[in-house]
Image: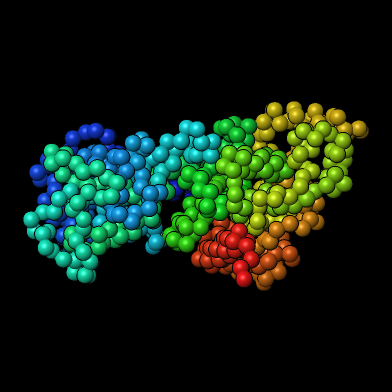
Length: 533
């Protein structure tokens, strides 16, 4: 609902690129020959070890190490295929198979902010693109995964013999690792592995045990899960009938059955790109990376609010069916997205729906108008976070600006025809059309008024913006009044000194993290059952 700031954020997201070299084609010959690569690789690792406590020399040594690996990337990826562990205790799921990836882009310079998205160390961070043509919830361009290529000489250099780790650790193994077939001397000179840097955080070398380099920011910027062209937000509002494909849930990374889905639902004049500032702050926390997976609902925002809520319900059904979901979801909705999220945990019966549209209960159970106005709460959602949500509407949707936007919105003919047909079935009903999303956010909206009388069936939390131009009751985030955003039944409420798009404010981010970790701990305790004895 906050228009120009949202557009600016989307434009910045579209312009921000992965800070990396152009993608390298597999199978090409580059860099040093075998006789030169092993000693160069050994020397670069020694330089890192020797400069561990000297920031300036460390940075220069790391840059040279990354460049060496990037220049020899095709050969080293061949050595990492099939996947082989860099250490005997490497978990199998921490390894990536280069053969399954269609592009590997080296990251030569890290510009990750906030802190926590990157780690300096040994190895070459890369963006690994995993095509997923059969995954209906994958981003259109496939998944962009963070990975790190780590490599060491297959045999120690002469200067490595007898060299001890300054920290007291044993030198790196020079014999073949368990389960890895020994290579004849004519084979490539180096051992390499493509690893998940979240799972493999250190690497033993002949010089020292060093941290493994990590860059989570570059894959996030490369993915299309959170970023679409900036003009899409306007098109999806004004011409929802031209929305490409069906509204759907998009995963940031491949589904993980052990992690709790956190579903982000954007609001009016937005796309999933609006979540980028929040997503980077969540991913910077290793506790969040370990416990949850991020999903996004992408939909055209000019449609009637009840229809968008129905589409969210259907998209969640599809994702749950496709994955065999075994963890309950946590929904986070911003502005109008919070209304859609509230519908998922609310009950609206036939009698209440009659107050919105007389005769709707007489329509077929399969009719889209009936399904949008008569619904039961989901059982696979455990908690909802409301960010700057107009539960009782916003005057901006009812004033002159809202009226202008309503006139500009063009609903698809298929929706209008279906709606008119449904209304014509109702005894005594006049042929008329469903309102747009802006109608649905007005304080006078019958749907919003009826929904506000319901009580969510799961714990909910409110994060509310107040720019400081009024007290706690008369304040506003510039779009939603505090009194409209408040819910008496909320388990917690936090008022943040920011505007309508400020859900990435540090106070808001800290509260969102707290709620996610609270729910994850609750679910895990519930799954574990009562303590024995």
